[in-house]
Image (cartoon, rainbow, N blue to C red; front, side, top):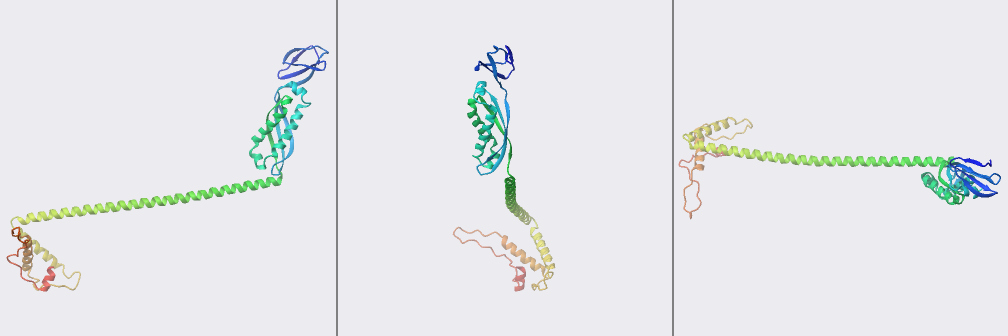
Length: 321
């Protein structure tokens, strides 16, 4: 109503004409007008406006027809341009959004429509803002609500998705098999390496043990020989040696005919004294010190014992050897 006193609500802009010509825009709060001369021609809301874009058909780059609808968010930035720049701002923006969306969808393929929805929305918003700048309207954002695909295309897409999933499953299974084979081969390799190292360590330890055993035996034998030599140098050492030789002869004679029926015996088998005498004679010949010779002389030879043992028959020689 054209009254003198007006109260304009917050977030609204009232366009006043004086005698049919634009006069001013009333600010929120108390305002005064001249009756009959001033007239409120347009009332513009400065709030964000939500407009449903009707469903429409669009053809993609790969010739697939889609049914798409969306939501448009806009705000009036200049009430003067919104009032005098276009007849119906909302209708104009809606038609611009539909045409822009058809144009943008024709530039991309079907697969990119689902992957690049955000970039598609941004392109539509930029195109609307460039055209609606002279209308005093700014598009804040545009969102695609639903995309309806033809049934046959939807079946093809599902088959493609299933094939892609089967492919991924096959690839993952093959990679798992490969990793398993690699792990098994690596395990066998490590096992062989450890087994060879263990065998080498065992051989080293065995060789070291045998060397220590041989060394211990050699030391024991040397100690036994030293003790025997000391014992022989003492009083009655030869008698003790004779007794030891006689005992060994009797022991060896008692072992005859146990492993074989064929036996070679000397002619004087029962004469233990001659056998012991012969053994002691050989021992005396080996232990008697060599005679001193001059430097020009030939190397010394072993002296012949004073009482050489009597010659033995051929059978005795074989038995003694």
